[in-house]
Image (cartoon, rainbow, N blue to C red; front, side, top):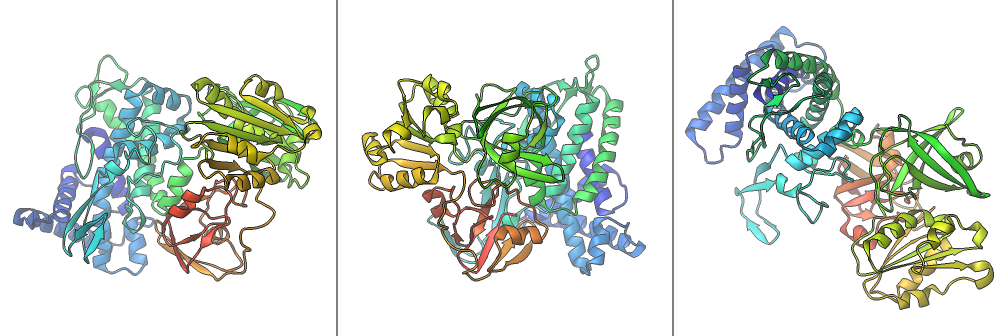
Length: 620
């Protein structure tokens, strides 16, 4: 840890800040002294003296560099050009020094340990180095290099029923939040492809770590360099993780792939060469990354682009294409769960479309994804191209699957599919049939010739009822819902008329929970954009405030401010633009979140929803 990770962090920090090269021992003394003062709530004279001495040394060095003229492109140069006072420049530099050494060091230790100790993680990374960004994010959640943050109460308050007096010290255990079983599925397991990994490793909002972007970028590039240089690296001994405020392995001895040589004990020259190679690449990228926002890095880093090739394509019904996709290199594809969607990017002459489709194959098949696309009469180009013009061998781009329609634990399940709406429900049926759960599937279509995947559906008999409206009329959904036991989870996807009837029927059966997946928003909008007042949105991570005019969406305003949020449907249906809400009431206008999720108000779909009040704060 000291021989590689800490050395790398120090060199990167010196490069980014514009401070001169110095012995690692001097830099470490600075950091330890400043940190001791920051946490000296007991007013220990020895700690305060140590902090004062270290702080004065940093002040002298910063003052000296400013007098000489800081290097262009460094933190000191940017702060000097901003008009900040000397005290502000010195304080900002100290803040980055504290976190910029310890957090990347410990994050690197957690990530490399997961790679070396978890064979499943190692196989994924060795196959595709772009997955290192996922390794870094899950290491942040799983390891929590910043274990706790300490704050002083500035005014009397009550938190969870506990009165807090002014001046009281509050310890927020981020490591505990990142393993909270109420929020995380299998929280004590390391999952490289974990969905919705909105951890608190760098805190949040106005309290987010100022060096989060730098730490992520530094560790990502360091791992890319090191794992490329030493593909046979292995653990030489089991690491021990310690620490409360900063948490990480106390040492991390590895065999670099030679004849039993380890670092730091056995192959110092090799370790030093690896440090230098990683530092060169990291320092260049870190200088650029320091100017980027942490929010954009976190959101986009977790979504590497996957190049797919059409392996098979057939059209069982005139307006439907069933498409099988494989990785362009033949590699395994990321895992997914029943109900998941994948966003496909379609390039056609000078146009590019991004559309979201349900995965309808078998999640156990790691080498292919299957989607079914129906050409819509009002196609904007995406579905028409896929159904009419796509050919075997064509290439599409995708990002990682996401699931906003996940099966929840329940005593019983009813799946209701209308037409092409069978696509998200087919994998659910396969999963439920294999689990021994109590379930039924109602598959509704005009006639049997128009029903895609009918053979696969009927293989689940007797749990399946196929209903053709041409000879039977529309099913009595009210009667069907009345027949299911209390506690049943109802999952439905199909035409809007069917979903509307189900929602109406569900009001007479409050003991069931209805979850629906829509192709498009209902014909009648929840609220018309343009009839409300403008609102202001505070972006906590980027520390920006943007104005959302009354005739624009939050998404439009974000894009106008240079904040890019993924959005596929722009109609409040797909969930790709889901954003965490930190403060303010939300006027939810989407057709995806459940009533409970809307009541909680902790996320919103920025493509259609707005602030109910004049002010809103988002985790961007």
